Image (tube, rainbow, N blue to C red; front, side, top):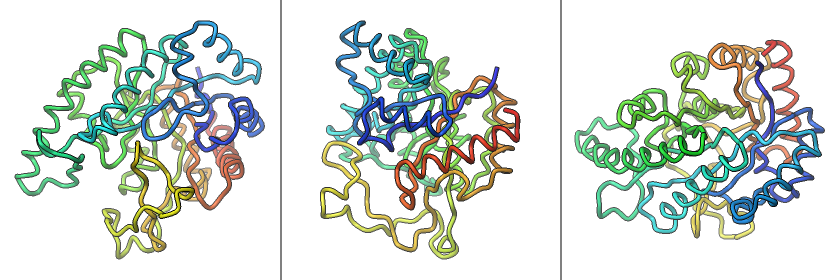
Length: 334
């Protein structure tokens, strides 16, 4: 067995699926992961048609086969626990449909987020408890887990029914954002078909060491996103728990959606950290050790680049990341 290397096609949203696969193949990659809902649209997966028609599914998979590529994951990252009716309900719907579709397509991996409820039954917005030093916050967390546990027990049963593995992105602003919070999830939900999508960029951002996280999580890692983070000099005064952001851009063309009518805030000019192309934050030697650690816990993982570095174009950034990833794979033998 060996790790397989691919990319998440969301960064090529203005390309057709066939064009996006050509870009990935040209970069030396063999796997592709596509979005099926959640925070962002699904330009490379006509979910309705695929759910409705076996012929559509056969034709869809043939696109990958004809390009010498393999469909290695469906992503539906969102907040299915949000009290916002324009977020929680549609994201939960997207998640259920994605699990069903993954089973129909024979795709093992579904990437998702644990989500974050509000503070109580009457909350209008989701609320992420960053550090519950105040006992009130533990009361809020107790309520949030009371929402999350039955929901994820249901989704775990659905994944088991369709022989699919859900992989949580340990992303801040979610109940599960670190190895200890995932271990809380394990204790409370006792899942059989939910593990972790090991995305090191979210761990670097939180000042964690991804290789230590790999060793702690072990067999619970079921999918991997290859993405880097640079912690910048401004972290010395801003820290990484930073709320000083600018408003959503007034120009609709500059907005990045996070749901129906909701968008990403504008990033600070002197940010403490930012996502970067693989190799721009950590060198090939680091990524070689990273892949070696992954292969030690599960040699059958799909490792997919997620390109979100605004300093590079869509294709340039993906290609730079692929060069680093494949060089690390050759060095490590993973």
